[in-house]
Image (tube, rainbow, N blue to C red; front, side, top):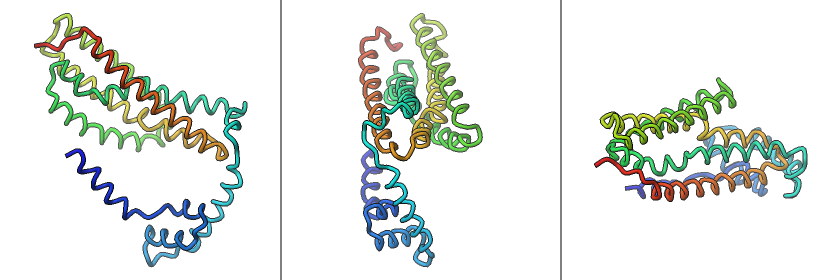
Length: 245
């Protein structure tokens, strides 16, 4: 069942037109016009848009010539630290671990994995949409602070829930309490820290280092995600916490 959406996407990729800006970059003007016609409609007047894309592509190419060493110039240092720092915060907040092992966490808490996983999946969709709506109304920084604060509080509450379980206190409420905390954790992650670092990364880097800086930041993000995910698994195995019988 999980392979079905992937299969549909693979088939759909054959019908996706090439990016007009990429076609302008490689110098195929006719294909650029055909791509715009597919995107805008066969009856649309795309001559002006095609001309603007060609002009902007040439301007960007002239301004984007830089080497890897340019990235480490003093004037770019703070920007690079912000970009990498946001990705490290995103991953070392434990988001990858909670998302990957949510079912394991719920099972150890004594909550139904089937019900929990289904509800978590349904809950993430509207939460992500809320983040999209609020990002321009609230601003990047307030939404990030709200997201990180919520994740911090809910992480501590999850720890409190398992501590109560270990102490055999409020055992009837612990499963539901853990599920609520995990749900709120994922929700606060979705509205801010889940997508905003990528948005900010695309905005803070100047054009001449955007590609190189974006590659480094992406490498840091996925490397950190792998470390956190595998480390959490080892810590989970090492933990003496046992699920209630």
